[in-house]
Length: 282
Image 1 (cartoon, rainbow, N blue to C red):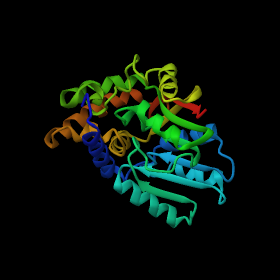
Image 2: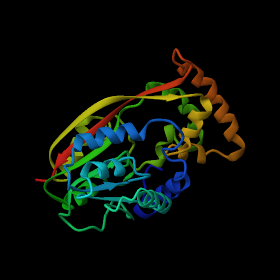
Image 3: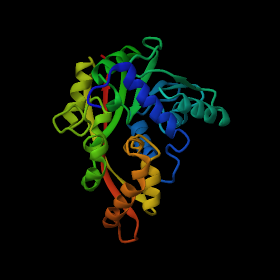
Image 4: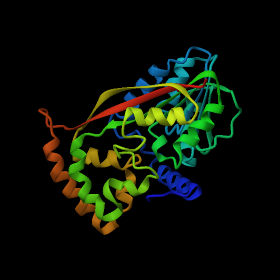
């Protein structure tokens, strides 16, 4: 979709992530974990801090934050997907994390007390929002003065992903961009550069915005693991749009192209650059 009305867009996102809640970050491929480690390290919450993780998913950032703030701190995770919330809350209880709280809530308007948090994190979710600057403005009000907002986004995709786009384009636009209210890969858009993301922060009344990036190398044992991974998170939207009788054909065509992505050990690899952007409430 090129434009997402708030309610309709939220329902689509919730439905998508309900669908992948069991497999999310759980197919043996490092992606969300390494990004979470970098994001939490960039924020550096001290022991005893109060932190909000928006779009907490299955807890990659949430549980690392809990370890950082310790038992004297408090971590709240919110997500739009009921299944994500239920599964992550269960995990928190199973690990005896009394300082972790998980709630179903819309990132565009979190119903939480103003000035309640020392830091807010949002990993790989802000580009799903219909109005990122409005969301950041709302998040700013939840922070203490000089509190930190930290988001992670793509800085650059592995260019080889472009080799697969024509397989999906007939079903829902180039690269699945019809799913996002703002094209996250538009070089002139808010997520197309460090300056673009930092401008969103400043538009929301946050200050001292700055970005860093790092390379993330993904490794897949085989094409079947790649397929499982693409169906275990937001990219599931690419497959769901394909008629069931055509999925095998598209999958097999993708597998043929993936052969050219193998490293010296025969594993399929992808290299992305990940951006982390931080800013403060004045």
